[in-house]
Length: 445
Ligand code: PHE
Image 1 (cartoon, rainbow, N blue to C red):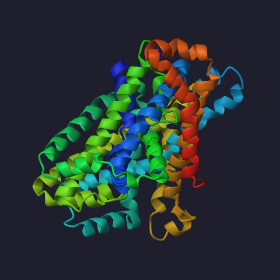
Image 2: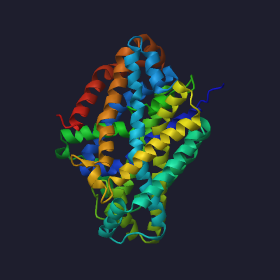
Image 3: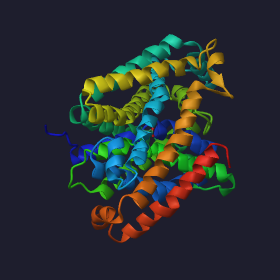
Image 4: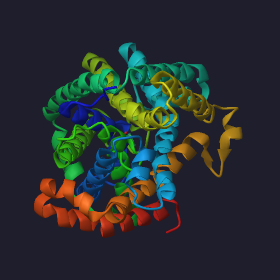
């Protein structure tokens, strides 16, 4: 049987599709806002370059050398203690866990596409009421759109790597970039654009503390899709001649550019038409619709286009979140793609329903422990615990476990003089940084 391989551009778009997600357009602007803009953005950029880029290369390398599902990759490449190392491959579960809330948020976005067509809230207050009503009382609306997202995702995945994942990204990624570029160009013509630029790039170092630093590192991981085997699983289908460093560069470049473009655009709209850089997760669902309202009719068009772009970003990330475990059941248990896809989908669909309920009045009381509901726990556990552990394991695996000669054989011709600094960073800088991030996010430090 001929194994499906990504085309080179297909791989870059698919990996960039994984990286560019809700993290870039929904999360990045609001955390940048929370930590006061400029200085935070610089710390984040610095982290992406120093840590993110080097782990991106490492994760691609494990997939490229292993060429199978994540568990088999670790098992195959570890010279000894194969049974222990293969457990590292179960990081792929993090993707399924993330999907539990990710699919629900995509559902909210679908809902906003439909409602923004005809109606936008006239004030932030009204907007907030609409959002909280959806969150706390509209179980069936959320259920319906979450189910729609589940069906779309398993449909694409069951079509396979080339006919499903690659094709989806070949259409949605350019569409997403065109929509964002068009809205960004419009934003540059507004007076508030200068304010947005200075908010995002003039650093106010007094706002940066250990917490901001840790958030920036954690976000660099989440946004680059690192630490859970998504990039590894895609790289397992990379053409043997492909250049890992160049691919990694493009993914990091596209991800970062899109986050910054989205941030500048949103802040311009919020300065110009809204209440300034609002903080918190409600930024795109609460402050933004009210700002779109102020634009008049073009606001409705922009709102719909914006939420479509956000849905595209979410969907291309979703397929990469589910694929590692799908690949695992295909490779290790001989399941058909259809069976693997439907089973994995059913998992996140069912728990997604619990996540919805955990926000609904009357049910949330039973699904909240220690101040966090089920939805927040899943978000917290994956981002604060699983991804940093995954990143840590990958850095250590490439830095210390895979024999240096094997790593050198592939990476030295590509990295040249940069091989040594990259290898050093994987061995000593990244693992320590990951460890500190994990402890701080868990509240130990
Ligand atoms: N990178 C995606 C985002 O920014 C989320 C994601 C995390 C996707 C981990 C795959 C793996 O939204």
